[in-house]
Image: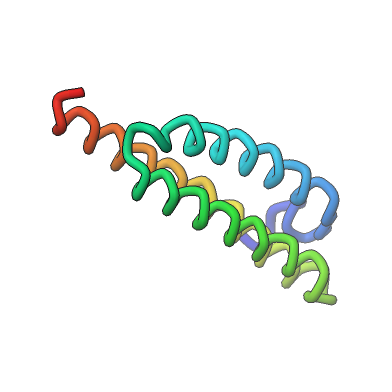
Length: 99
């Protein structure tokens, strides 16, 4: 993973834009799902917000471009995987409740 051009270059702006778009879309889904299952939706909002905060802190705090790129890539992967996982859990909970 560390040899990818996006990771080596460490361009903060692109990571923050992509992370912000992903976070906005996923948080929008979770806000819409608050009426379905508030606990899972709230957890999703908190997790996504926390991981985007980690992305921003990585962009600000890490000086080395390569280390910053790796940290931001990991934060994006965790953001995507956790969001997908929570959306699947939400869908499974709703289908099990018979809604």
